[in-house]
Length: 102
Image (tube, rainbow, N blue to C red; front, side, top):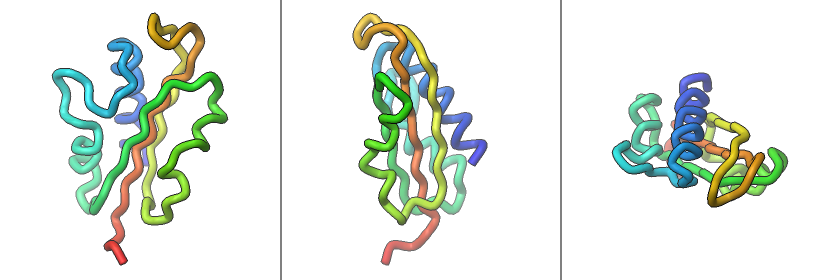
């Protein structure tokens, strides 16, 4: 989903700049709320934001295996952080479900 990917990448950039791997950054709406604005038929959304040593760690997301999510956007960038160290991957994954809950 290109619009979710753009949102995820923009949030990863902002999180790195703020040195805060969180779904909600000061002065901005919560990331999952912004996903609802982009996907008009969204029924639920989840966000994973974390700092990793390798991109392979994206598979550690607890939401990756949830079949309810039928749309996803991933933002990934490499950067230096005073708190988390040099050459770390800042990962933001947005999961959105447009399906009704069973």
